[in-house]
Length: 381
Image (cartoon, one colour):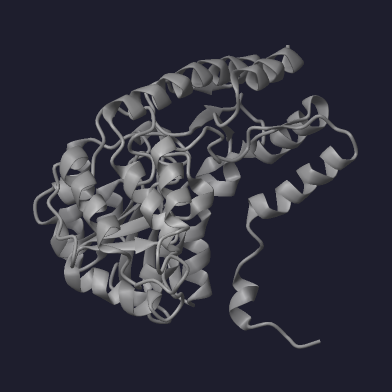
């Protein structure tokens, strides 16, 4: 047996990859599993996006290799989207780079900027991929605390006390996953200043800003942000196109170009039809967002009821595709979710998947129909 690379010994298979195998097995045994564990949108994409994909299949050159930088129309659509919704001006030619999903961007940005032994500031709780990619590149994760008593925001006083000499990147993510918390304007001013003070690249992972959120923000709205910031964004959540794998990184030309150097050595361009569909999605009217959020608002109300039936408590002033719920005292997250799966055939995510500060919490997805969530409530009651 050929031994795997040492870097693989630093990470484990992604939790949801492992757990969904268990869920699939239980389903194969006839268990009526309700999956409220993952945030995979179940609603239809914009009709115009689907039509554009279909029409593109007959376009001359549609099935050839595409540009590593994406077609001009996609980059223009991203720039227009940022101008309309975030009031951010971007050069479509030099400050926009399409990605095959923003998750790809986490790896590409890390490869572009990290050397072995460099430090990375990672939120706890936070998206597990930040830490896993850091470890795969033999860089060092430095976890910073997000806690409920500080509204799930970083404590900059505590950060300043850390030894930051090796830190090259700081990952931030608001609206936050898993907590759903939004960050105030002051936070963005503070984090940009922090990045400039310590010569740290601040990367804002921003896929949830239009889900149950009336005031979407981009870090690039803030003064001097392009000096030290990149932003990842995605069409996956906002437009119900997660399986299309289309996203983007935006920001300063030099930083974006560094990411392109990595990306151009790892893929051969995004499929033409997906780009054409993404263009149409990004042109969606305000009615799209209103319609989408009216559905999610009703679902979230039901998930709050489900959480209450399980003796959990929730913060109602949140955004995104999830409900972050606090368990009763002295109950462990994984023990609780395993029990709910065993007794009620409902899969929810333990907070510890997202870091040690997730102990005592669980995460529910709202990516299921109202009838399914009602069934979950009925099972618990």
